[in-house]
Amino acid sequence: KGLILAQIVMRPQPSLRALVARASPKGPYVAIHLRSLEGTCVRRLRWEGVAVQRVTARDMGRDVTAEDLCSMSGAYVKAALRMDAVPRSWPIVLVHDGQNKQKVGKLRKNWHAVETHATAYADLVLAVRSAYFIGNPASSFSANVVMIRRALGAAPTSTNLRVLDFPRPGSYK
Image (cartoon, rainbow, N blue to C red):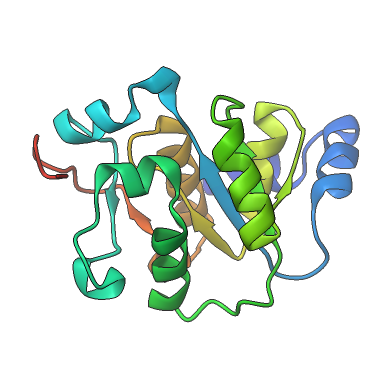
């Protein structure tokens, strides 16, 4: 099972391979998944969620809010990277749904994040291949990235999310 998954994700078809190669930085990189979920992200996190994020109030110096997670606030990104000692020199690739252009602009300006402008499948491959992944716990895309990464042997500390347990309703403020 794992071998087939690895071949699909790590050795895609030639046209997709070329697209991924154009969007991939050289060396280790961070992938951030910004997902607005048609404006329902905060509500989804407060009621259900798909994955559990690992950043704590201690990491941030204050409570982690659903807004932090849905907008990938600068404080949240900084806390996630610091929590797992991710080098700040690693480039950041931003995969997103195109729904929050203002936040995309802030991540590009403040974190020098580079947008992929790729297909959802290419974004999936880029996120899976990243050395560190910051995902949105309300997004099934992010949960799938984390599950694939874990199936391929990535360490639990190579992402801000856990997907094997689920938050209780109302667990985010």
